[in-house]
Amino acid sequence: MTPLRQFLAHSRLGRVGLGLSVLLILVALGGPRLAPYDPAAQNLAQRLEPPSRTHWFGTDDLGRDVFSRVIYGGRVSVTVGVTVVVGAGVAGLAIGAVAGFLGGWIDLLINVILINAFLAFPGILLAIAFAAFLGPGIGNVIIALVVTGWAGYARLARAQALKVKELDYVAAARTLGAPGWRILRRHVLPNILPPVLVQAMIGLAGAILAESTLSFLGLGVLAPAASWGAMLNDARNHLFDAPYLVVFPALGLIWAVMAFNLLGDALRDWLDPRTRSALIAADLAR
Image 1 (spheres, rainbow, N blue to C red):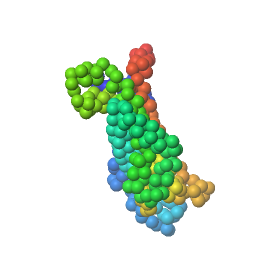
Image 2: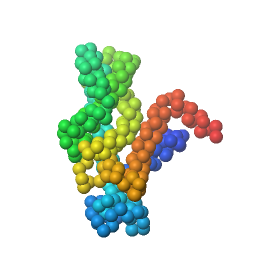
Image 3: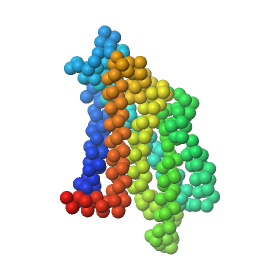
Image 4: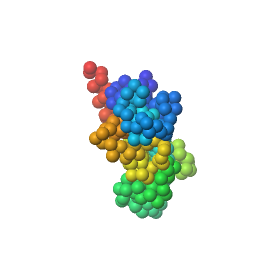
């Protein structure tokens, strides 16, 4: 049995998280085919219509189809989340691995000064500051979240590199005369990658939530593009006369955050040998 099939066979949370995540990605990728209307098309004659057969999730205060906008908002969230996690994860992995592996003054400079400086501020406040400085727009949101998010990955990668570089196979490679860059690439990076991947999966949920927060504050995606955060901001004035405007984008956000958090938690448990053994034993005992 392959590791993926074994993981799915013994982890109920993993199956649920993977299913929700794959469904979210498929909805995001198939947005233009699934959305029945143009998400930016206005029809003031049909403004604030409740959910019906014509408009499944109703219409907003400009007559735009909420169902189409929720789907396109998911596309924005997934795009921002994946891009931020890849950018911040790769940068943090490289910086943290180099700091932990080389040690000395380089580690002191990167860890004590650079990483701690970014981690000293609350991430979302730092992201708001960068987004306000750069201005709204999906590209600037990605830059702001990458700049503020790499430090967490770097701290984790550094801690793992400090542990791995003291293991016997790394000492054997040094004894055989392998250059430092080769040891780092062939022996250190592959063995510190699993914890970083778990952090990236959980960080994907955080990036989606941060993008929605910035869009809610008017620092994210520019109108008329759809975003869950911007939709929630627009719905504040209609909490009582049209509550569905809040419910559906909020459910989309809950779906995305829960899916990636469940998958990240399941992967973390599976990569821990003791927890994995307990999961397999519990499954065999049934």
